[in-house]
Image 1 (cartoon, rainbow, N blue to C red):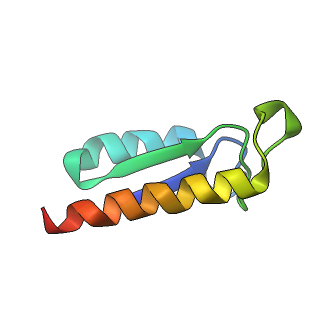
Image 2 (image 1 turned 90 degrees about the vertical axis):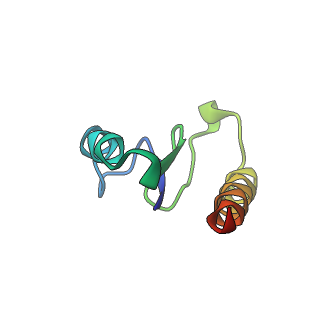
Image 3 (image 1 turned 180 degrees about the vertical axis):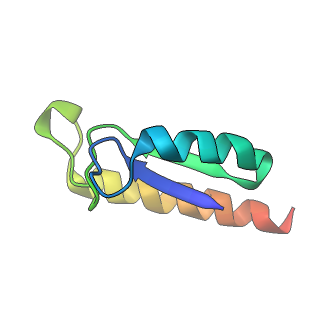
Length: 70
């Protein structure tokens, strides 16, 4: 399972999701976007554009999906 999570997401509490991913072990991958909200919009202080974040998420998803056949 791949979880993509922003640290400012008010709809999914990272303090709850983290331990769940730990319990799932190797079945779960958690990728965190610092300063990202539920739509992965980031604050300027993050130093990234929204487009860069979406590209990061796409690359993370591609890499994760590529491991499914391993």
